[in-house]
Image 1: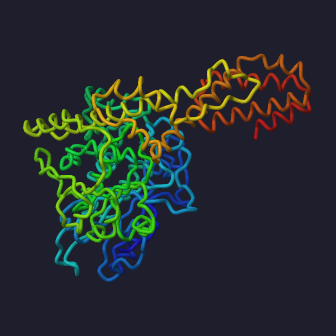
Image 2: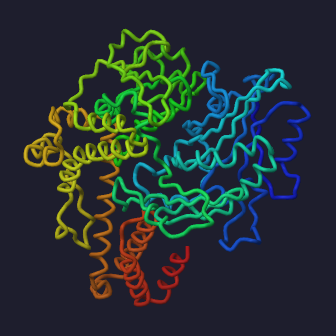
Image 3: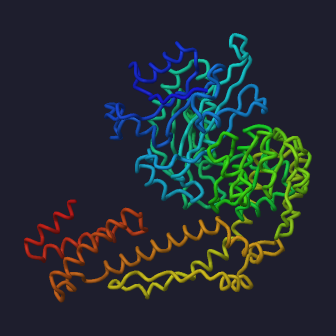
Length: 595
């Protein structure tokens, strides 16, 4: 494989993209083409009304586009980068034809974050499980392998890869379905045109219906917001109007076919939900990257709307930079979900406590034989029979009703989409029943509003006390909303030690602290600050002005949940206080306002 960084340039110009493609042709070595923003492209596009710089629109959706080709002579020695290896299935997968899958990789330490602040302002309106993780990128792959006698290797092998911070799996796979097949026929000029289309897209604003044209096709999408009711999609209502020019309507940007992924193991779906909830080390061994990535993503999504806070790798290879870290036997396996296809992992990950071995995922309407829970010692090779290899004993009793409902759906040939809706609703209700008692207890840690004084620092949240929380479960536990019996207390005790609890509580604590800051600001605005300054010295007044300005900056920087009129009132207070001061101080304080 060969990798070279190239930049997409404007139409009609011979830029770095064209030169690199020409160089690759001369050497007869396929290249990885990276299309994205470069300093030369950072100029105003005269045809734009949005006032964005060249490639800003592209960067809001994608970091870059890569083309990975296999070179028989150069092999994999040219660039030992994660992207190269992750963009191709393992040789044992035998993926003939077209294959789509997804991978996730860690951003290099010390690397400058390339995405501008534009995305940050949208991030606050996203559900927590769709917020971008600054430490990771996603790679969305369209791989083609077909026989070609004209090539030394006897096969045409190439991947088109979209690299993005956005976890919109279904959306980017749909984009690749639209552009990859034609790209393989028409090569780089077609890809450059597609990148220019992406650059003209509106920003990925949550809650808005977006019309995204790409190479003659218009896609209609809506990115969810944190205010949406969990388990619903808004795009359905919006499609009832006539949209003659719309080619593709996406009901979701991020969801995978949940039932198809859980189909071989749906008898154990509740146990797998527990393992994911508790952040247990989990390996999915699958015959191809497509199956491994879909199953890992399905597992991560099964605890939604709770975010999975540990690392997960939909497709993981032996060349990955974290390979040694994740396969060492000198310490306990980390809290991570790995999707693998290489038989070598059956040996290197044999010490992991929970392994799911799946066969080929069946098309919709077919149901594979249900796998059994087996002891880990029985897993010797990747050729071992499909099964869930673990000694884990679930805390909760199995819900037979959902199993009967799904089995009935299979017998009645219910579409996979409908089965996925049933399974997703089941997981959602299970997660909500589990998390509501925690939400209720954490809300009680919030100080009373009457304890907030404008002249004192905002009060602190009370400490989370596990035993105090456990006592609340007797009257307000999950039994109020769930029919499932079992050791809920044991499940909570285990969860409180997990990375998912740590991540969830840090997020909630931050939100509540910001709410206290916002309430403190509102309390300040209700005070007659000008009257206060008349009773205090100039030094104290200047100190107050500087503190109020810092409050304004903090509210803007941290996106505090403050009403717009509160911010306006505070600015008015600041201006009034400054104008009441001597002229020399006014000049200094107004100057600090400008900076």
